[in-house]
Structure formats: C-alpha cells, structure tokens
Image (cartoon, rainbow, N blue to C red; front, side, top):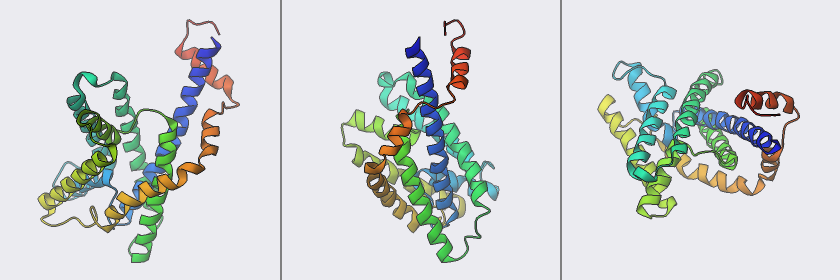
Length: 249
C-alpha cells in the first residue's frame, strides 16, 4: 500500500509543479501578445481569431478560448496521423490544453494592468521578458514528465510517422502555424497582421529554444523539488483515500 501512497503523492505533486510551470508559460505568452510586436507561434492563430471576434468578423471568443479549440484540433490531428498507434493516455493532452487556455486568459487579464505597451521600449521589454519567462517555464514543464502539450504532441506524432528528425518537424509545424495566422489576418483584415505575426514572433521562435537550452543545465534544484514529497502528506493521503476508498491505508 505504501507504493500506491507514494505514487498518488508523486502524481499530485508532479502536477502541482506542472500547473505552476504552465502558469508562467502562459504569463510569458501573454507578455509577448501584449508587446504588439508579434505573438508566440502557438498563440498566433488564436490571437488572430480573437482580434477578428472583437470586430464581429468571427465568434467572440477570448484568446484562451480559441487556444482551447486549436488544442482539440491538434489532438484530433494526432489521432488521424497515428491511428492505431495513438495512445489513449495522450487524450490527457485535452485536459492540459484546456488548463493552458484558461491560464492564458487569466494572464491576459493580469498583464493588462502592467503598462500601456504603447512606447517601443515598453514593447521590447514586454517581448523580451515574455520570451525569457516562457523559455524558463517550458524547461521546467518538460522536467515534470507529464503528457506533452497538444502543440508539441502533433510534432512528435508527425516525426514518429515520417521518420524525420524532431527539430525539422518542429520548424515545419511552427512555420505552418505562422503561415495560417498570416492567411487568417489577410482573410479577416485584408492586410498582414503585424501585431499577430511580427518581428517578435520570429525572435521568439529562436530565442525561446535558446533559453530552454541555456537554463536546462541549471535545473538540478527543480529536479530535487520534483522528487521532494511535501510535508502536508496527511492532506494528500486524504485525497488518496478518496481516490481509493476500498483500500486499506
């Protein structure tokens, strides 16, 4: 029974840290969006549609709402690509993706109070800060070892089926998303959507990966935190008893 206790405690603690990582990921994404220099790749299409919704050209959903819709599409795409090789466990991506979308809306609200983001300096600071925070949070999110985000999942699926190296597939998928965001901008507004796909988008595509590579060797403290078992065990044991009510504790 102790093994099951430890598994439940580890699972809960792992996903608490994952939730914190996702909060800072979406905080970084929100800052990039607020910079008006171009959003991140994964938020470019949702941002384009949410801006269109504000002027009545598309359903009026938030950027987080459109992110949730896109995440569902990406998971369905994985099922179509992998077919029988798709693991049912990966459906948990829908839960992770939904939480990501909700946290993105929360952080869009929080970042609305920081600055007017009108001067070029404030925009550059917002873009640089957002991309840096995003890169650090992505590094910790990967360490949590849960299922991947839907955006990463489709890249893994395509790489597995085609046999192409993952970095090449990532570039192909990211480029496709950016192109679709530009096309949607022309469709809705008749022009290139610079606030959606701008110099900040290109900067983030390379800089975020650089930050992940830079901070990875220095995350030993996070690994220790991940392996730590919190002192409030009696509360988690209570959750374990709720999940396994017929077991002897």
